[in-house]
Image 1 (tube, rainbow, N blue to C red):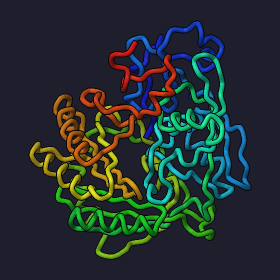
Image 2 (cartoon, rainbow, N blue to C red):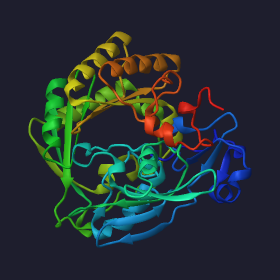
Image 3 (cartoon, helix red, strand yellow):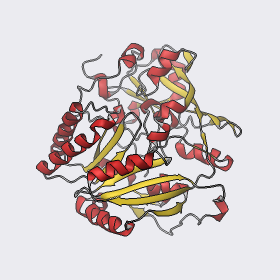
Image 4 (cartoon, helix red, strand yellow):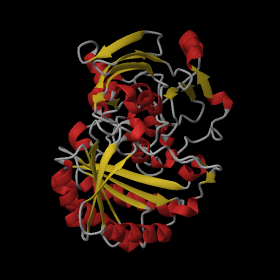
Length: 407
């Protein structure tokens, strides 16, 4: 899916990284670095300035022997894979969009669909260069400036401007994947099956429909015999397909889910899938209108301890039944210490905000933890920032998420 456009970001709010580096002391803040601009809640308003890191998109070095890559913060996931895949290295943690930037991944610290095996993105960051608003540039790692490094990983860009990141990629026999699909009939079976598969496969997650049925998708990188030239060629359509929000309305999604559930069959269906179709399926096609599509939906994502996952999911499903609402997507990602849940709803103004508020209240009772990028600013200001971030945040950097009441 394409990154959102800049229609809501006036020129007066954007600032080049070059200008910030040269004139930071003389510019009015607050500031926030941005890359792919996929994190809608991160925008600085009320006079704040966005530092556009997209032009900072050079890969500074890549060691094909070790898989260590050093790149500027504006480099996209697509660019990293494009550089490393021929040497059989791949991203250890991916996002839902290839347009996500390395700087943004470092700042938001997401977990992918292989969270059981690889954890969060931050676990694979070796070091980074950070510019504070004072003009000081610091190299941070687990050895040098370790506390600032820890605060910057998942610090939402509030410790300063991330200039570059050194990342450890993972070695894979092939970039392509061997995908397994298994269906289930109850939420309890789905959670158990997804966890079982996550322990033996690199990737594993489950999606559920309104009735609680769904499909577990598990996958590993294919063996070395799956060479790039031997795979089916990438689909090339002679026209672009405009994405429309109504494609993803609940009733259409329910019908598509039923078809997918029945098509999966009762066994373990395995298939080799090209990596671009597996990780970024929407971007493998020539879609247009991604910005409009993103604006039409709201997501609620939360991590909970595994012991509370079943209870949390049932409580959320009960709340959705009472509200008469059906998510476009319900996804479960098992992890070793925390499980991830994702609900996606059509945007419906106050009704959606109220519903997300109810789910957030349920999450609190199950020791839920939200990523900053996923917190709804309209009704969840009370989610506290990490203590380490408050100790190390740059006083001239701010985001709407935690800026209420600050100067």
